[in-house]
Image (tube, rainbow, N blue to C red):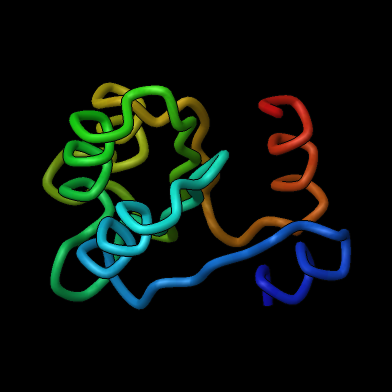
Length: 105
């Protein structure tokens, strides 16, 4: 859904099924901004943010998640602590994410 929304707004969008694939994609074609879910197969969003900050420290990262706190851990808070510049709790409206992207670019 987000891919269609941003393409309709004129953005170039690349999509990866998990964090590892996203990192491979970014090695070949760096992005201006990364939007990641925290719950993904293989390499999850937290692992991906850590690796993104090492390899591409200047790319802004927006993390999103529908996870609630687990065992006292707020994963969106963790994402901010390790480098996400903004976070969104699902569900959210695409216009809300679009506003954040416009603020960051």
